Length: 280
Ligand code: SF4
Image (cartoon, rainbow, N blue to C red; front, side):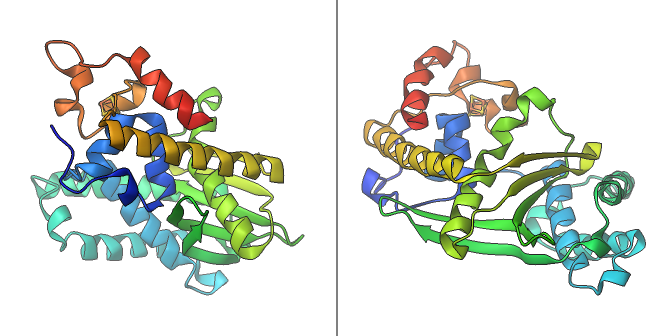
């Protein structure tokens, strides 16, 4: 497959935290999504994630005393009624029973939110905050789930996940995108966030890490190195696949050269130079 007409290193003007994370995880995944722009079928898991994010966003539109579990369930149903009218979601379930089972499982997942925090105690500073910052070499654009201000005035970034948490020793890479958001928040609000939280509703788990300026300086350097690595990959049309446990969730596994027969055109070992360069 050749690069799309007009794709050149110069066309990479902005990068989102999730696309940067894609390239770091697997350059071929980045190419499928960002350059080839191949359509991806929405999965039940993704539909649950989208509906849960929207329901939780709307929960915080309500006065604190109204942020109950029943209200969140109602909001989830309301959001799903809207989503299922959208063509991408319309054909997700073959039967009403499948849709009902998914709905019940989804309500069980969002019920776990109340085991992780009490929403009547939370006053988000911003929700679904759109952020664009110019790093000179590249613009970074993304949407942050939630930014809170703790009673001591420190900022906390929270990201919801509807899946189950990975084992703690594998959790750190999941913070990569949140560290980028923390760097963007530092630039915009001139305040370094104190904490990043990943809230895994699927398993009632919260992972959090502390943030400092050294970490955010490092992530800015890493992003600039990643930008160079992506531009080099575009120039050379070199996006090697990098198989990992995450391939199980990849929409492109069926067309990925790493799983082709005969064997992959590029081995995981060959992918390493690109990733090393990206890591700076
Ligand atoms: S299947 Fe795995 S190696 Fe292939 S593109 Fe997806 S994440 Fe990368």
